[in-house]
Image (cartoon, rainbow, N blue to C red; front, side, top):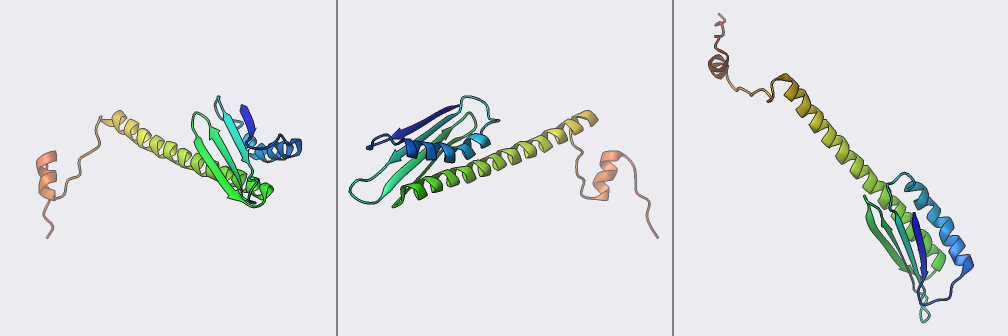
Length: 143
């Protein structure tokens, strides 16, 4: 896993880096079973003129390519929000991916089942006459 924390337009802060690593641990734990390579890029960009700081988090894996960013007055709150939004987005994308795999699996297993029977699914016939023509037998009349 490649993790990079970038301090843009500011000096390196050990306290901020430790806090960012602590918050990124949720994302790292979520991605621990993902295939490699995994890239996490956290960009910290304070505003010197206004109290309007910007933080961006990029997650790049073979399955995910996500970006979360947020701006706000408190640096630590902005960082927490970016991490939380990314964590929720990763969960959502993973659930969508699993649902797609499961539905594809159901379709494939249904295809395999029919292929084992006769190769094609049975035809739907709409009336008794069509059944008689297709099957070669007649229905008895009820009195």
